[in-house]
Image 1 (cartoon, rainbow, N blue to C red):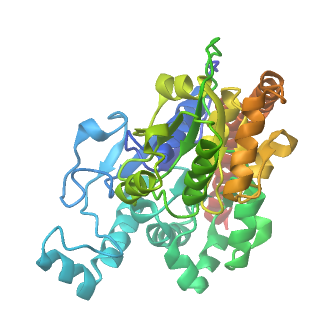
Image 2 (tube, rainbow, N blue to C red; image 1 turned 180 degrees about the horizontal axis):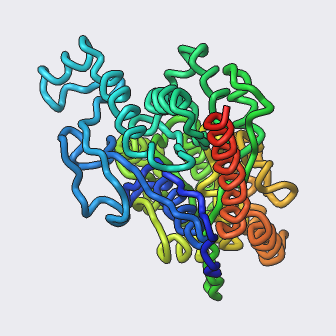
Length: 407
């Protein structure tokens, strides 16, 4: 990334987002923040502990679990929406009866605003839980009363905003709402957000150096909930089909930290007698992420829901062909460069067999994916566009303040 001369009067941005070192959203956040700083923008990071932290149940944060300490952390216990009993019956019933999940989410929204109110523009990365829609809506309400400008990027739809659609009208108080696909934009519009205030941008990815490596394995990302919307059962059935035909492929499956359903997924693979074809791994980042993609013949994304942006963009920048459905964001990123399937076990098996047969030139396909990634996914280009948006929004706020002062 090229360092640029700082602007004479740069906009100060408060960026609120996940800063946990083993999460895909936090790495997207930190890469974007670094790139924004490279444009000369002053960026203050505000974060909090969430379900992934070992300190999730405490008023503390384990600093070694942060990406780095260049942030302002808010330590407040995480209260799950659907509590379990492993933390004790007292906590279980306290959350169930007193709705501590709503209390903590509201408190986080207030504290986020207090930490961010010095900035010209406040950016909120909406994911779930500590960065879900409740703290966002509290932040928006407080900021709108004080004339602060809020920009929000919606990574995931929060179950709360689906159940209580009227709150989605608060998005209209944002200076801008950013979505990483037209698919996500339409989901927000269906929930009541105004279409003309939503801008579609690209989910960035670090651009690694391409190193000549032998590509033998296949790769699959299980996310934070491997059994929901990921096509996992169909993938296992595809392995059964391939194995019955004498085609045993090595498959690396990696997941997000604290992945729900992981043990059940491993047991299912064992019951289907395909566990010997699978290597299970934790979340990859940086050089390890580039290495595992650049040693894979293809990335398999049989998703039917959720977000496929992390494996999609990781595959593209590493010139790794993608076997995928046309669901969610996938066709918007791949265009005509995907090896598309209908999501059934038979279609996955057929696509893998086609790759193994050598009938498709994977090198040329990988080169085209890499070229598309360089044109659309480079963080420095995305940050340059966003810094222009922040500057415009910040300047409009200053003009409004001067107008109010002279009125």
